[in-house]
Length: 283
Ligand SMILES: Nc1nc2c(c(=O)[nH]1)N[C@@H](CN(C=O)c1ccc(C(=O)N[C@@H](CCC(=O)O)C(=O)O)cc1)CN2
Image (cartoon, helix red, strand yellow):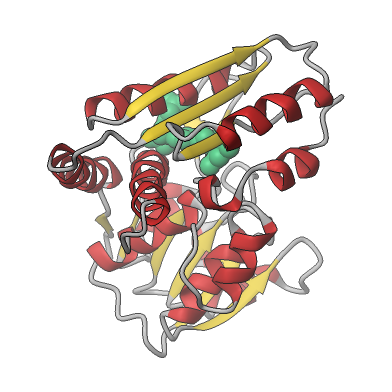
């Protein structure tokens, strides 16, 4: 079998075009502020791409660049000012942060109504209890891709490889809400290949280059690869050994051009949702 390629770049472009049309029709411009601390080069690329995509879709977008020596107190003070600024609908602090700053403290300081990353405990709780809130962008993008790929979710056996707060856990919640039978597997799971082979839908979000081999994938599975790993030779690969997995899967996302572009499109979707909710309009 040779898998269908799920084209995340094309799906993200369509999503962004739809959002741009909705933003144009509004009497205001949703405001997004992206905060970058330090000079991590990959973060620089992601932040620039977010800003460009937001501006192109008509959002009032700006990046705030802080030096690598910024203290936690300084960053918390900035977050406080953005929380209080009525022109700001969405706040995103790009991760990772320098070592002197506790990521959890910063996420906890963001107003949950402006938390367009969906990382705040309030938004995690709303997702877990199936109430409207802001959903983390990467898992939200994966769900869009599954639907675009025509996956039948209700009753499907879904395996999520990885249990991070920002991808694995919210991904499992979204799949559960879509009536999948969900298993989360991780580094301490016994016989990972066998667990993954049971999946009709396999989401790999473990952050290890090409860890998922072809014989971890069931014939006919749909594989969503969340990993974005830069190899020493400069190549970008996912968490899935693409060619091996594509030989068995029914459909698969590539890296690059799969989940990554969806993360940015869903950030814009979340910013529009936050802007509408803050004005009392259901997103
Ligand atoms: N505050 C946040 N920080 C981080 C998040 C996040 O969702 N919120 N996710 C990642 C990085 N990330 C977004 O910030 C991100 C990563 C990759 C892509 C992407 O489009 N990748 C391209 C390839 C790009 C390349 O050539 O390097 C692709 O997969 O096609 C978008 C967003 C960590 N931090």
